[in-house]
Image (tube, rainbow, N blue to C red; front, top):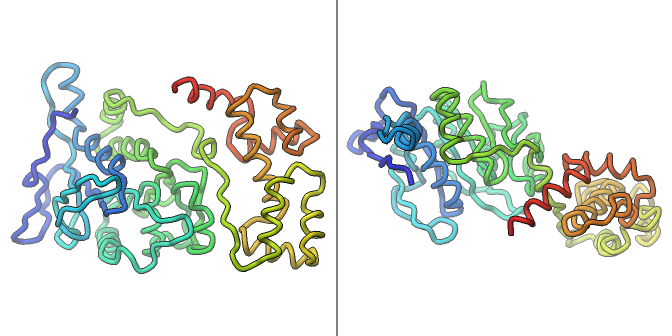
Length: 358
């Protein structure tokens, strides 16, 4: 446990004036809501709060000085319960915080088919205000949806949890979502920084520590907390997301059929024939329902099944490829790597390590 204790006065917050005063420490605000994961919020809080203090304590027995001012903010200062019924007691309401160096939007869960339209109005207005005043706005996981909703990501690329690729496609079409990215720094010069799925906060924290406190402090923090990177990106951890089209009976029937028949030769031709639609009409309606071309959907489904075989068995890789519908082993291996970021052999090793830890 970090020996550092948060002192609200140290961050320059004055309730009476509702202002943030300048001090010599970079100020980091963690934006939380009832939909936030405690692991992200308190993981970031503990790590960032201890920068500069905990490493010397653990190596020399004498604590150093905290290098960052860290506070938790929310729409209101009233305590609330976040995901898992964990108590959160914000240090300040967003309306009372006028200046920060970094505002980190912690993950804020929403279903994969439900954008946060009309929600988080106070938080989004505050993020826009902080951005105008020069703060870097960073996000973790679904936190990037708030930036998309704010319009700050229009025309830009961003990271976020891989499961929200389709949500970005239909709800925020001007945002270039990067499902494999752990940390998207492409807009950092413009004050925007987005991290991928939940534990991508590790990379985000170390990057911010390096930027504001120096590479040595980032290295020390990584050593103390055993923070390791996601060098392979998010794709090895991803899974195929499938939402059934409620109103298109031929496409819905096709998707149900292909679930079991994905390994057959020429499955797209078979689906079109079963649907009673023309090739062009089928392709258009299939895209509208799934966000995929029919053949790309079949490939995605096949690779998803191949993943499962590789995770739980030791069958020859070429046999796995044949079982899911690929007679050409070279094509299978190339497609698998493009989809998952790893070769089939590397993917098997990765999940064998995970399984052996159980």
